[in-house]
Image (cartoon, rainbow, N blue to C red):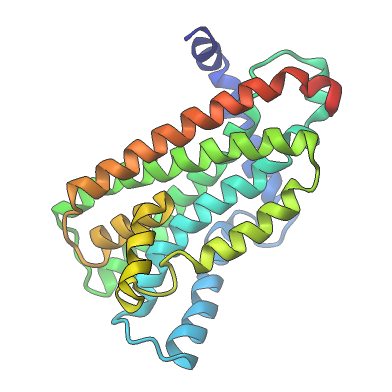
Length: 257
């Protein structure tokens, strides 16, 4: 509890780091902050071309279906990839100033969350234009989004801590995420895979959370309460485990970086 209070006391530092990361990410580029919207739209165009036009996916309104899962996946992977090397990259800060080290990966995860929220400025108009009008199910979307954020933050804490001791972690993580992406129903529907695989998807917390978002925005149905609770509980557990591992490994950060 004392550690948690300490982290809360350093909330201004967390907010400042998120702002700095957002500014630094697009500093000097021609489009600047617009890349927040351009990147997911380019991904949407490429995947739609490959899976809808070339591979002839039979999912109705495929770009809408794809974009719902893609934005959530980008938030998840964006948090992990940016936070993995953050302790090493901020070595001078870690060595000279005392602050809860959790702030560093949390700032990367927070930046990914902000980017996701901003990307909703694209998703929501697309939903409205294509006839996917709001329903009561939309009220459950924040629950799924927070669950994904908790999962991302928990894993960010783990990988950022491990990377201090094993610098190959970033490369391994990128490979894992690439394989994980195609093992998650983002570019294809869960209905198109064998039953035993669909059962596995529902066990994978991030896949389950993306399925919930598809249920909410694409199928416009209230998600099953068991699936929703599973996502939230999984998110909280992953966050707690991630924090415990990070806290244990953080004691020697100053010497290792």
